[in-house]
Length: 361
Image 1 (cartoon, rainbow, N blue to C red):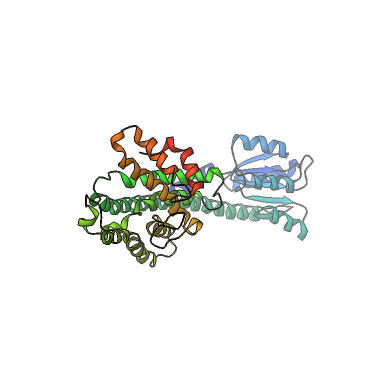
Image 2 (image 1 turned 135 degrees about the vertical axis):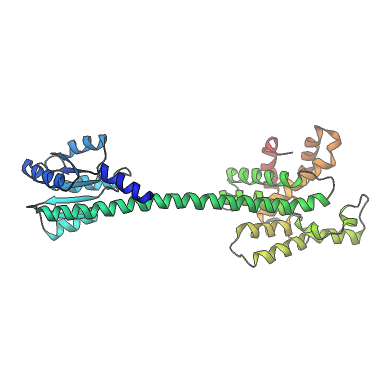
């Protein structure tokens, strides 16, 4: 039904621009086009043709090659470079009938070539054929646009559902790790802010793209996903942990990475999961090599994990100093500065300190 309505609308509006400096040719072609049921718009020069197109664009152009102000080849080339006119079918009309002329015309974007003198049936059939092709292209373009819109809406819906699922998983850990409300939201937003700031700083512009920035915001939320496997008596213990209990707690890094890796094995082209694995496993590594689980140092630690290590320490320190009210932020920054070249990458920390007023707390 939509295609039928569109077809009827196009048929009603079909007008054909005829550009030829020979009046006799214009008269003949105008009469042929009118008898074929279309609106003929004859002009004698490219200048007049341009003025006519400023009023209404034609559905097809019959264009002479040899004209005084600008030849047909040159104007055809200009029309095909303009986004507004490049899809209008152009048929060359000319007494020039050499193979070279035809090849040149087709290379410039013309769809057909009609030689003088004109035969009514030939002209009518060629115009009808190219108008049908043009109409089908318009309909196809319309359907493609609708399809692209639907696909985009579905992809956005899927992305939103995946995001909600990921945050739901992360909140399971947050609910068991008492006293850390809004931790995952803070880590995600601050990781995004820091990654963006690092890109602008020029330090990591080759590594950090817009996709990287979008991905780290979501992947950072799963940094502690391995805590799902840690017993409550250790995760929620109020007093100091024993050495054995510390070892169990530290295992959350490898446990989280292991479970994310099982999902990644089914989807190896998922950049989100790859980054989430790096963050979950290495966000407790330290710049000086004294962290866990593998004792990596400096740039051996994935960039995403080094970024999350900074924002994670900040959020944890805010919790430690929350009794100090407004002073918690300043005290957290003071302690973090002491960790440059120890726990934290000094270059990342330097950029972090520059944007600290924009941090989500």
